[in-house]
Length: 202
Image 1: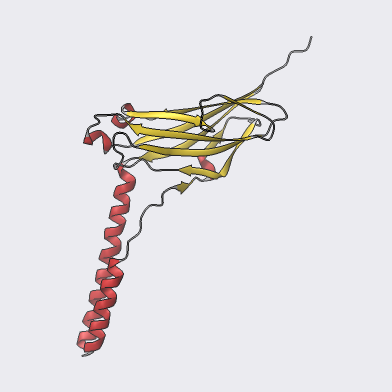
Image 2: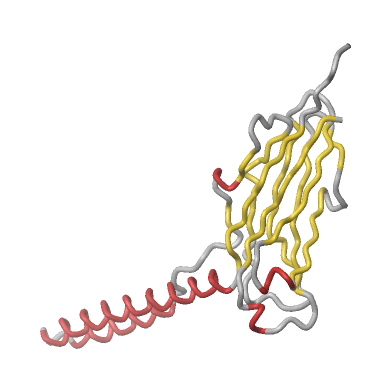
């Protein structure tokens, strides 16, 4: 008698805390950039004034205004994931996540009820010699925001699970939206989102 063992493997794509924190970091970075530019401008104006360069004062003032008008540092969106953002189960050989296509979209405090954000996007490829069944789910961390987010996981635009032939690829997306009537306090919170991919032999 021959007993076959069906392989099942999983991979977790982790999206770090999302929420107002990313937006706040961008604002603080812009303020710091502007403050540093103002300090440099004042030092240059002081030196030019001491040396009696009237024209230089005008030129430096114009350049300073132009520099301070430029946008300061901000967080990139969407962001490419690092290799460590995909965690495979031991011995997982049924599929791989193409990390070149892995995209995270921050869920910020600007998210309003009715808005739909694609929080995670990943392309999965069947690396097995036969068909596999691919399933996907999203796990939310704790906190007030987790309780009011509506989450939908799609594979190639439809419901999971799907069957992938050898070498076939599928686009997996995690969409989040705020439920109606969410308070401002909840919108300012953060939440972790994990995309959990599970595959088994057919």
